[in-house]
Amino acid sequence: MNLMEHLQPHVIIPLKIGSIDISISNAVISMWIACLLVFLTLTFAGRIGRLVPRGLQNFMESLVSFVRQSLVHEILGEEGMVWFPFIATLFFFILFCNLIGLVPKMFTATSNINVTASLAVIVFICTQGAGIAKHGVAGYCKTFVPKGLPKGIAGVVLTVFMVFVEFISQLARPFSLAVRLFANMTAGHMVILVFISMIFMFQGVVARVFVTPMSLVMAVVMMAFEIFVGLLQAFIFAILASIYISLAVHPEH
Amino acid sequence: MDATGLAQLVPGLAKLGGGLSIGLGALGTGIGMGILVGKAIEGMARQPEAAGLLRTTMFIGVAFVEALALYALVITFLLIF
Image (cartoon, rainbow over all chains, first blue to last red; front, side, top):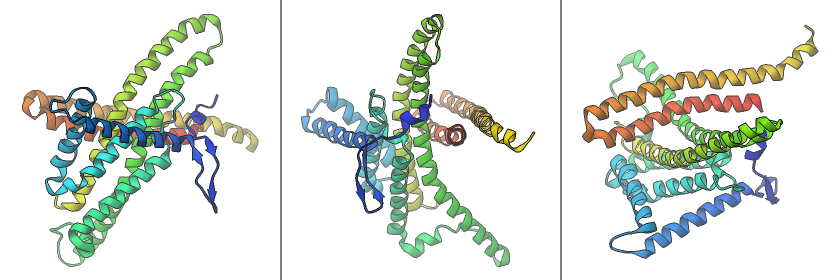
């Protein structure tokens, strides 16, 4: 039994432009649904406009103000509030993608490395863009060299080495962002899948009678844990994106 | 053992390596995460008013530590499937 094929996207409508494959797979459809749900929930929650919020409005308002306060304002400061829409979009999109994957028959878009890598590359481009917009191209290149290096030949060697290290760390960030989200979602859904497929792995009637209730209970427990992990990973992705942007804008930290 | 016999061993060895990869990866990260969360709770108990800040920082740290186990997990996936 190959469990991995449950996490592969299936092509629903094959589409090609030249040699580029842009087929509509179930991953694409679940991302569309996530977009639509983000749009609908935030729009409806925003349109209610009760002075004392209740229900959906209360929930969404607390989430948005959480993103605004602890993900953007505390890290990027007052002038960094221009990044609030970007960070909030990342947070809600990843959150809904993660949670949609828990609905049976739906595909977790974030358990596909291509989706998370695209998100990480967007964050990478925004980070570099924020640094260049703040310091200019030459000024941003200067932030790669730490201050207080010794003069002379040792300083030159150290500068080359430090710039090399800084380059590696810059390139490792989108990689670790992408792999963290992808591996968390894949592993979590794989665990649920393994618990469910244990029912089919055991053949004897007696074994099944004992194994089935246990694996169902464990699957439910893991699903509850996955809701928490989905929230946590969306939070982590958004907070790391804003930390990276703040590191590019204020390099002295 | 001849070449074909060795070739037959390779998938099994790959699975063994995959199991060892996630096992040893989780071992180190488990110790690290235990220390991390323990220290965070120590800090929270000592200074309950800083609990919110500590919790946020702890989650970021946990994410970094956890990423190491997840790299091992990716290697496991690559080796097993």
